[in-house]
Length: 159
Image 1 (cartoon, one colour):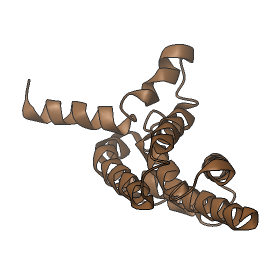
Image 2 (image 1 turned 180 degrees about the vertical axis):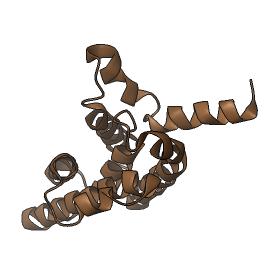
Image 3 (image 1 turned 90 degrees about the vertical axis):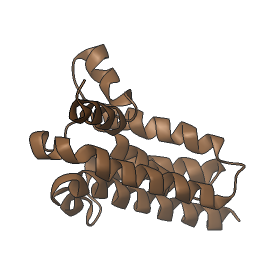
Image 4 (image 1 turned 180 degrees about the horizontal axis):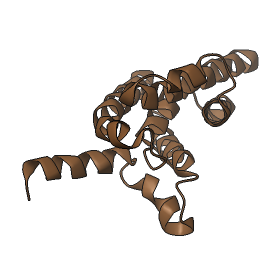
């Protein structure tokens, strides 16, 4: 196997959220829902981080963000924003829940997911229009920031 082919396979595996993004196509023949499954995987990982220091959430986001930019680039060039690419939703979910637990965590995940799906909040749709992997990733990061803001507002209301 050539090195370039192996690199492409690794990028496809990571870009698909470690293959989670391929599940909808296998189950119902469409990529619809792949982003939500990717966000769900990140939410599960973030649950495991609840009892760790807040900076572990930042680290999870930074890693997912970097992996999203790196792994989705070749597919952005050839396919635009493929539905099966969901590492970007993982990055958006990780940023949404930094330092949060309980109901604020739930609200952050839901707001981030809805902001990404509907793209009605300021800047989300415009971020998606950015070129290449940046466009694939930044709409989810911005949606995640909206989720983070909503979660922290609820945290302070409940405090």
